[in-house]
Length: 274
Ligand code: 2HA
Ligand code: ZN
Image (cartoon, rainbow, N blue to C red; front, side):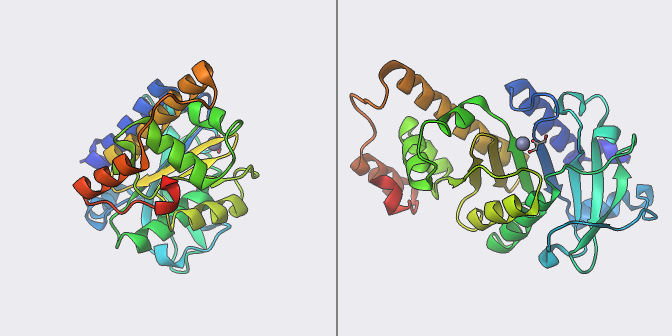
């Protein structure tokens, strides 16, 4: 079966297409990656080309040595992923030291993986360790409302988590750890990757001030769904602030959150309930 017909490829393309339709990927905005399962790589092995050069990752990911990833490409538009997946996407192999990668499929018009490669791989490394290998997806988008909130709320995980949880009853069930917040940093560099991956030890999502958000998860549905839920909660926050600033006539209380936690067996960060 061709690489393009594999179910992981189809799921990845659908996530990109849906993210574009949702408005999170203007021009070449956003990027995504998936840690491919050994059996998925085995199924396409004859179609991979391992003659390419090893290139520096500019980050150290020894825990990902020998792993394979599907990535969106630098300068590629999510809008085009479904039409030209073999140009917009590529499969990478990480070397035995976790310092280098090579392209073994895709990027047919040249180019390579997203400039956020270090952040993606550092996040994968943290999540692989933290979830016993379960998490396989890292997804970055530029959703309007979450970005808007980074101009008016303090850039603080407590405030963002608390406010987003309050906007919809299901939020604490979907992201019980809350969300991390990275201050404005230069994108596409190892430093922002290190800062983000440090937060991923605690959270499944990290807001990037004045830029966007990174979400991680087990599969495409839950990772896409996490970004979707956070952005919807942010939209409700923006709507309430547009009507009444910081004023809330009523809201979900600390006791309400605690009863949700009891009912669903969640451990909510107590600091974020204040
Ligand atoms: O253009 O979103 O963060 C891709 C990006 C960089
Ligand atoms: Zn971005």
